[in-house]
Length: 271
Image 1 (spheres, rainbow, N blue to C red):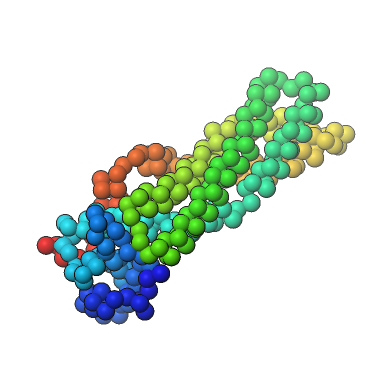
Image 2: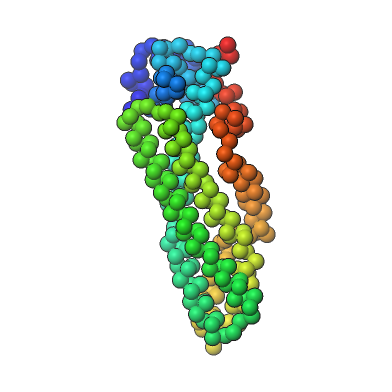
């Protein structure tokens, strides 16, 4: 693993020459091998400034290291996203909670069989029953993606080298996790009306004498209150629509407007 303590003297000297007052800097724990040349990736703290240094100590102009920077910054961003947002998603209790919901809905289905509910309620329940399966399926993808990202990060630190192929791999883990998070939210918004129909029907038929319906209604209510709807969560719904435009577009990083925007943080010379 590359650290400041084992950074070659000529690389340390080059980095220090770009350090400003009240700043410190750190080095990415691996070199980036792009087009058969090694580069060091320096990050200045507390600013967002960054620096790309060639292995011979030269600080190339931006036009020469644009590809290097985009892949280095993109790789670092994927690691950060998986280790923070992705890790918080992985630690959630979604699989446990939605497995319980799946069982509850199966019990609701069994109880309603003997009550001859309206067809629209039967259809609504069928839609409601899709929710736990979809959320569990995509939670497994999130968990796998975050775990793979963690293992790839450990391997990178030992290897001390990152290539374009490694970037593609790490970025893939991030994209898989984000897309699965999207689908988990999408199924909630999509089935909101159907879920409400089921809850309304249970509310209209529950009574002290029908304890099963009463019990099921109260067990389902927290799920219904927690899950997304357009009415309760307009901001999240809008953000999800905007996110969909990003995560389902396969734009090469060298053409990605958001990635290109970060070039302004580079301290490499313009020419």
